[in-house]
Picture 1: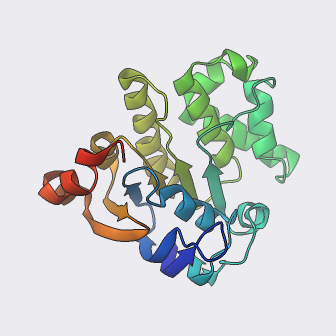
Picture 2 (picture 1 turned 60 degrees about the vertical axis):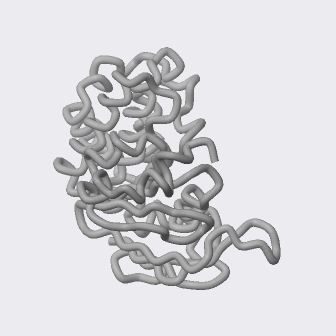
Picture 3 (picture 1 turned 30 degrees about the horizontal axis):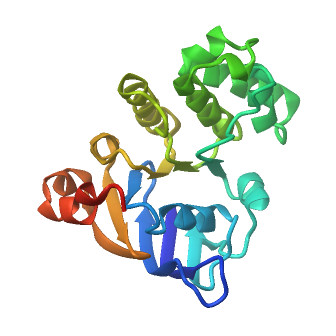
Length: 239
């Protein structure tokens, strides 16, 4: 579903944040990007989403080269969903209105049917359809952001630190919702995360970045037991 080849990118001329990244995410896989702060995780996600264009390399979605396609076209025409880390819901609007915005390009009848499907998938949204998004807990907001991104039925979903700022209990609920989404929606998920243990617990595979390169990759269960994980990431959380 996602294929990244020798990707180089950055924000400032002459300074690369990503240095030759290769990455693959298959159909209905959950793949997590791990690594210390500043290693390029969110930059890679922004490149795939279309907020930032690569300087070199290719980005493919379902076999199509979309490296120069902006985010609004990827969402509308390339079956891509994206949930940013912050400001990912419209706080002054209701849960229903947030979801309808996510389905704005659908036929009205299809939009209402999709809204009902997502309320069945996430019962918390059904219970609070008419509540303002501002009144939701942190975990509920994340589930709303997830639901809104799923309104157009994307086949690929990008999540930027979905557990940021959440308590351990709420964090577990959000990760359960993500894993549930993969199974019920049959969607490929690429997720940037800082909570390595919890993220690897629901992931199929992971990539650990260091200084803009892939330092380690493999099945999630193997990485959980790999001593290099602590050297590259777990022992350097403040980097």
